[in-house]
Image (cartoon, rainbow, N blue to C red; front, side, top):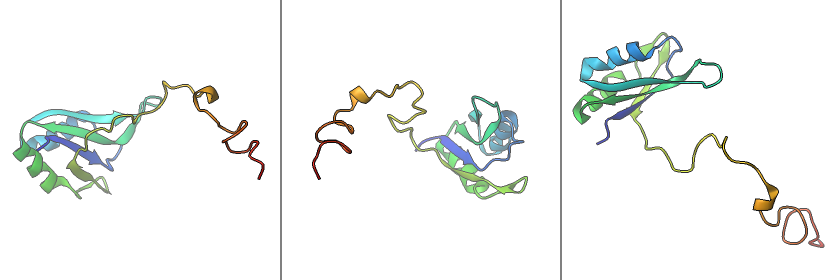
Length: 115
């Protein structure tokens, strides 16, 4: 069983240290990190917490999922593994030449098919 927990719908007032101390009630916390917006520096409203054991992880999920924090019902569950190929896409360039038959000439949309 994974020991990484996803925590969603967090109020923006929650900090890494307050998150860590709340989860520490259920066992040893390896890490607690609020995800921050790169541009604004504001919280994105979700975090990841890593627990030292699977038992502590399950105890935290059972106790905290659906709990109200500053008027928001938080979501606490096992973190899903990151999918390969997903990301911001900021490093890729769009080039029409890398996509054959895109709207020009035969076999593409909008060109030369004679409909």
